[in-house]
Image (cartoon, rainbow, N blue to C red; front, side):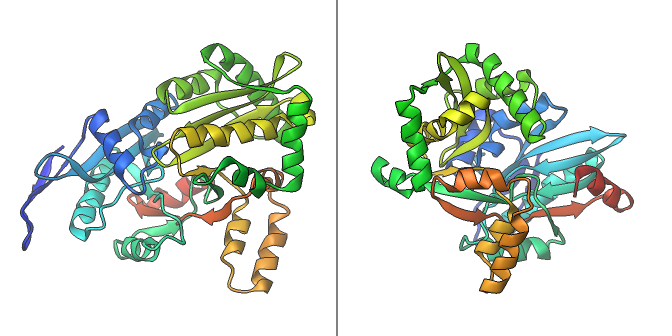
Length: 362
């Protein structure tokens, strides 16, 4: 698919819609201020094994290089589909370019008989450009909806020395990190042969905490596709894996996506030791922050609440969220609560939209 438009005013180049190769696309994602792991071509390959079809769609300049774009995932079901850009698109800030990108995404989504096209910008509410982008998307007739990826999270600033990172942890977390070291917990970086042990830990954790896990093949593919930006960390207690994390890095962020532990891992402080080593790994990758990936959204809203009463009400509501225990673990490592912009839907088949939202959990 290639669509050209003429240059306007003092613009000296024409624009076109096209599909860059994986190498060109990934370089663009890495360079873009909102570039994310979930926009890299490897994420599309990973999701292709779970029923999605991935397509890279970009606005290309006269030199053929992307100036805006998105990794679009399409999931067909019952003769229709859903189209979704995880933590994207990557807009240019130029309305002409960005309208062309939206038109290209919508064209592909309509050809796939998508009920909706969902955008999920990788931009924090507090970012200087957030209000401008939000307003612009509303003017393009997109409607705000809940995100698929976590809307609220904790970011840890990695642009500081180890001693300051440790000092930012809670007193209890510092004690647990040291306790794990004293009790002989050994943290090591695993390889493909350790993935079965990781999967067993994931299954046990999912059963205990009542959440779904992916297949072993999924985690194996995730580790393989993102090498060397993926890392499997294991904590051995008495010579066997008792806790593990599968973590990732993009050009700016380390991402805490998958973790599991058994009872020995929980008792020994192995999870705390793993997280501490994960921060060091992300620093070594050149990441500027670590995204702990998901806390109760009420706490993200509370962080920006207009007054103490509203903040207290939201914090009270968060106590009943299934993620509250996870939040306490994550918050103990310091960091700042952040909240992303909402997702935005373009409704393409209106009679099926509400039904599709219910099936998506929205």
